[in-house]
Length: 454
Ligand code: SF4
Ligand code: SF4
Image 1 (spheres, rainbow, N blue to C red):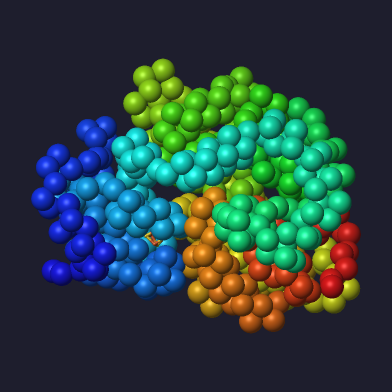
Image 2 (image 1 turned 30 degrees about the vertical axis):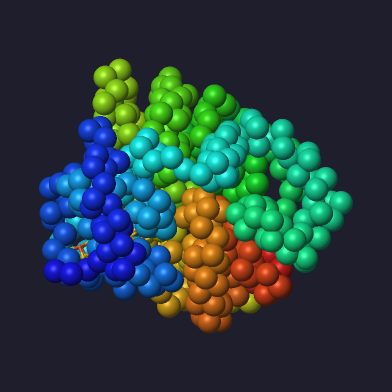
């Protein structure tokens, strides 16, 4: 079956005569059996966001699987022409949900990304941006130090200036993309400090650990505080080990193998002595990676069993609450009935198969009606750090997502992931509609506090 696009035909022609092509190394290349399970039917193409925007076969799941196979076979090289197609994948896993043959594309692209990082030399600038991201975002201590300069940067009007003039975009679209999703730094960003143990407010049903996240703990601390209040109001004693760092989602998704493993070990150690029944996370991308610890540390003799035990306890906050049931009374959120649209985060919907539970919880809030947007299963373009590394594709996806959400006529958007909230918030711009985490909405409903709509 002929599926190559011209760029890859050229790649084949250009590389066919080259001996000793740079390919994958022997350490966990994309599994040939998984590759062979693809029957090339193309069902996945319509739900693949990169294919929708770029429109080339090689930027679709099927095309990338062909590329992996050809590199495995030594037919083409791992080079700039091929890596660009792996880089354009959002890792949203929509293709995994769509594929009728059960192709485990998630495993294939994960193995490929680690291979790319080991065996392909990126340009100096690409490397610089990636190193900047990987040293900043998984490190809440460094992020905390940056809060003061970022606060001043926003208060002194530099952010408004760069956004209004588009100056930064002319210098570097990637830096401009980073700047454009920078959330507002408030005094609350400096103040949040949840205690190590918070007792259940009613009869204790569970002892649960809470993961704070890196971006979440600094820029969305209100979401963490709301999550803790909702859990304690529903009979959970909450434990928050302060030694916890990053969950490893970001380096894992981008193929930074050793950094991901080190962070996973640190997270496991943080919860080792806590005696918790479950480990709760309120960010979709983090939750997906935390549940993958057994796989990430599979070749670590000391940690692999601990990793499996840890992963078995991980629950998304909504998944957990929908399963154990809400015991706290819920009140209406506003003085009038509310139309709410829930935005499915890819790493909840496709990565963890969680879509019913958030809706079940939100429907329990009195006087709330849920609306469903068109293309709910298509990524908003955030995809971890994708919107910083591939700003053009992310921009288009962000616009489409926001339009589909607005078209529902909802008064409020509920989003279960900080990255999605930032991406959607950026594209909402002047539109007068709030975006909140489902945990914040439940918290309002439990406290009986009404909020003002725009
Ligand atoms: S990944 Fe699945 S849906 Fe896509 S072409 Fe292969 S078999 Fe078909
Ligand atoms: S993970 Fe998402 S972007 Fe990547 S191939 Fe699958 S559907 Fe397309």
